Amino acid sequence: MMTTSTPAGDRLQSITIPETSVDRTEILATAIDMARMGRGFTALDALDWIVAMVGEEDPTSAYHDANVERLLRLAACIWSLRHGLLLSHPPDSGPSDDLDTGC
Image (cartoon, rainbow, N blue to C red):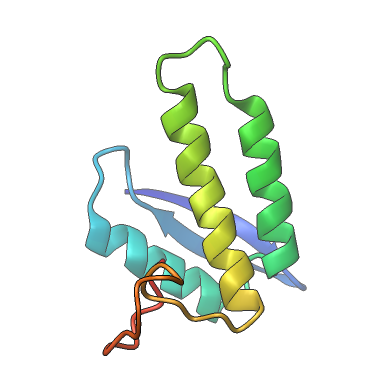
């Protein structure tokens, strides 16, 4: 774990960032903590960052298309949440019995 301090008004708040080995629980817990501290992006800022990340992708990389597709799916999820379109299935696949956002 890596700890960093971020400015929050007049005081610094400490955020613990999981190291490179991906632990889903730690990453989600960190994201939730950041949201509770008000350190998350607005939906529009998040979309702007995704646009920037797509622009930073190397078009010659073998992973370019897959990375860009994942980023676009993430952008679509944020846009859908922002606009209240909580779809857990493709629009043409019929009704859904669950409340999962599909993101």
